[in-house]
Length: 314
Length: 317
Image 1 (cartoon, rainbow over the protein chains, first blue to last red):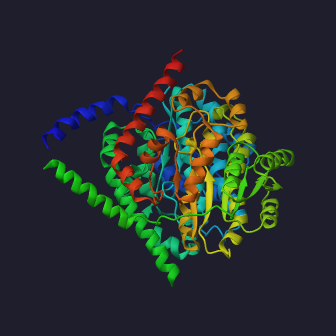
Image 2: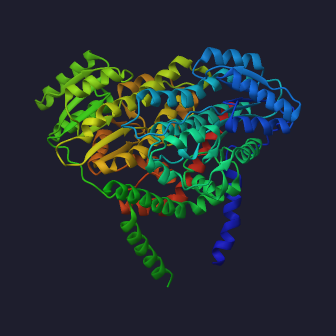
Image 3: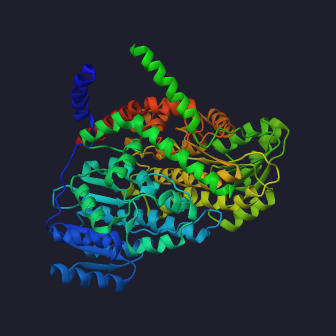
């Protein structure tokens, strides 16, 4: 017992020295926050939060009318004008034009996303392609369009690129093959990109919300396969405001992975893999709890497969 | 006393794992069964074809170039005296893939192996190239799977079937210069975890294969244009494996219905630290995952520390 008490601080010290990249603080006030998928849901909630913290905000989305509504609601709430840009993230040139018009970006929030749950054998390839094109290719388009100006920025303070993933981007779930594929993909992108951009003082954050109360979720739950609801429906449903607040806090502290509530933290530890961890304290918990985490996930999977077997037997 | 407790705890854990790991282990025969390999005309795909043929499987190859397919067919005929069926199609073309799959007949082991990799920092990579990598590696894999699924689900033989997805160590950790490639390879895992839940009731077993650098024509091309930093970072892993080694281990993993198939020490370390919510059908391996989880995460943190030092040092110059 004594040994552990002595080893722990030494271990913490070791972690303090090895965690890379080092921790960073990213200011929001007075800086330009550009949010894709910003006209509703989590994106809009993020816009609210960023404005309330003194940021200059731009929103990109497909529907001009939704953007105008968002702009109006934000003006009503804060007396501030946001830039709005209508473009489809699948159209690189349109995205590029919008981003150039918006001006140099300090915090890029790549948040657009579509989710259509369905067993793969029943799903139309058009829907699969839609999710991959909007959620993954679209994210590459947005980042690539914004990069040159972000890299060449005059303001020498740290910048941020935040990618909206999902708990479905940490664990593949029945009915989410295409959605999970696109969200898992964002993590591969992020891990590689952080290595490429660390020298430019640009910091990547990947955000893993659970189900969040948004217009998108309402639509999705109507068509969710029963099995999906059984497996995924038991978690908490968060309010968009809570997700926005924690997201922005995570972005400001340059956290690579941003998770929500206790279950989110457990998911993060279980799926830590080779993602960077900039907080030596959290790294400590990741290492110490890794084994127990795997036991818990194996139990979870055991349950999942038992439910599937039972429901199939019916 | 301590030793006794440790041994007892180990045995109890092993027992617990034996009772809870799902899906259960399975044995998937290859002999006389139909193995369909996309990206099968060269590299790992061709090596897999050769291995499968040598084990008595009936093999079909899908690839873009009819010319390369015919060469592959000829080389296999020369070595094994067996004819493989060849189908020329681009995996991005769903109808073409459907036609090929229909013509080849019901599939028992589907190996989704096609893939392109074009290294380069994201800022230097053309958006068209990024789109191709995603369309071929990820969307293309969906095309192949959805084309094969109906007949796989309706197969007459009651034996277990397999869908194997060719990922990469770059699908276990994102690497400098591989943002698009890593994105697609990570994506395959999300697909696989969801798909296994959907297909377990049909006795179809999903495997994800994570090879390191492998000596293939594709690799030769890629090395020439690989960014220097990527080379240094990846060079810190093991050396490149031969396609035969990768093929053998892949097929062994497929036959034992392993969900994750890893290679070399780095691969296992990444596999243990990134076990996440991937199923584990083998309770001894599950035991190792648990016991080495913390150490693996620590090792991953060390790797990241050394990579970021390399990157920052290079930038300082």
